[in-house]
Length: 245
Length: 245
Image 1: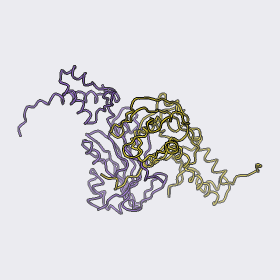
Image 2: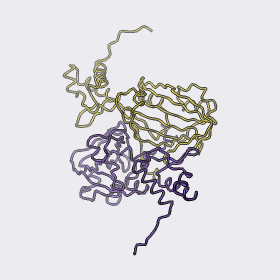
Image 3: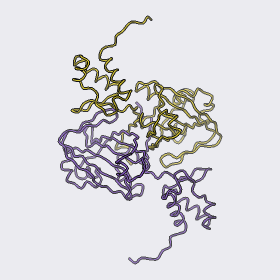
């Protein structure tokens, strides 16, 4: 393939320029972005192009339009559905970001592993494999997880490539399909060594997610203790009548 | 009724003493509480009584026992199920605390009200009634909510007693039963004026919950924008296969 000289369309150039201003923090979360009229005047473009710019920004999740009020910079956060079983990898692909994983710790222990989730203590028989991983999107550290996996159910998992999706590994290598995950969310503050891990200069609010994953009734596959950056994540949930009781 | 002189049982006195030490912060979250052997020695009681003390503390949610490791002070936080439709009042009664509500703002507006929840913009036709309330448990401010209610569906709600459960009011006065609530959780930091509202000296992490409540398909009853103290709340969720997709 030969590279062709190519001038991106005007609407694309303008939307890139606005995105860069958001990324540099010149336009902060909640701030208004230029209106259709302002774009027409500033860049000398048609109203079709101006409209396309705003549509482009909205589609990519950078801004939000509020009827009768204008267009505002949206929180640059990934939405995560708390009631769906799906992993980081798939979550990131869905929102159009490139996921990667860095293994930062690995330990095999013979003792059983216990964790409290939603006021109940869950215990998984040993031996277990404890993995610590940093998960990134487009190279930005998004969350850090500690996952303790049953070696009875997943023998020799410590010898696998652990920088891939564990859910895929469970399914393809061990034929284990998770049926339920019980999770507990806490709001915490990241300080001290956490700031190095997430490469952020100031303390940031975060979610701590503790969970226990089952394959069938009562069969625990793994337990999780993860930290999701609050400036990068929002959790989505639905409450409904039939969950009552 | 005449009051009878009554000496509380020994196990009760000891557990009260330990609870007071937790409340005063002498025993902090995660710290070990006296073991069965230590209770027997310190208070000169039987092992039955000592066991009863620990059981009592655990039942009331003050401590958690980890097999082979001991008994530790638990986070003094209320658990809230994110996938159940139930209000603050019921949540507090379930965990044995006394709920109360303080109305701190009330406004009727003619314009429609819009909010973004989980990337979607929801709009409710006007007029609407906007209520700001502080919710307390045993006199401690736990969360602050702004609820914007449809006056088309709940006419004259501004003239009702708004220091009671709104869910009860919807059901008894307007025969409205919520069928679904879409919610979005963010992790934020409470600073500045928030510290006065929650009477806390230092910044604390918190959950922001934005929600939209439906009675039947697409019929919006109210929208919510609330702040739950992170040191007082944990959210519980279950993910399962059938929510997939």
